[in-house]
Image 1 (tube, rainbow, N blue to C red):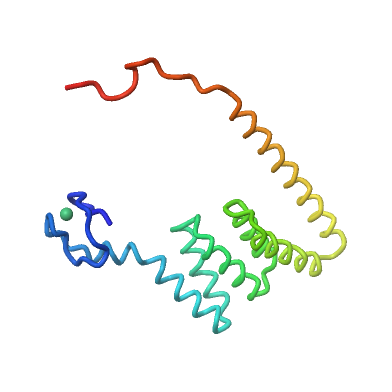
Image 2 (cartoon, rainbow, N blue to C red):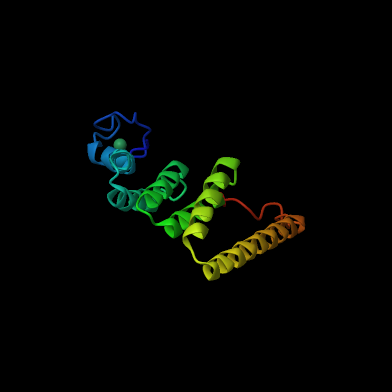
Length: 165
Ligand SMILES: [Zn+2]
């Protein structure tokens, strides 16, 4: 890690910064805090304490919104407590990070469970929202492709960078 006071590079295990002597134990705790929450949540999922696990994983994902492992465990915990729509919502977030086959399969399973639980009218709505999402995805891809083809203006030589003192 980087010492928050003097920016020296220090070992993660170091108790104090070798350059400025700052006590680092509190900073290390903050650094590891989401991991501790995650481990606690993992134990609770193992014990079937899904609601508690969901609360912990919501915190982990607030700290680390790109932590796919935590997001997937959160979806499992939401499913465990019988909240299929929450599970689908979480997996939709996961798909934005990783659209690989494992996340897709989990998402499709959760969606199927939700549809099984939902009445026919709700199924129609779910189909519509899935189609809408596909449409938005294609639109985003088109916009992205369009944006890439726009030439980026080159800066004037000498216009960038710091002025010399
Ligand atoms: Zn320092």
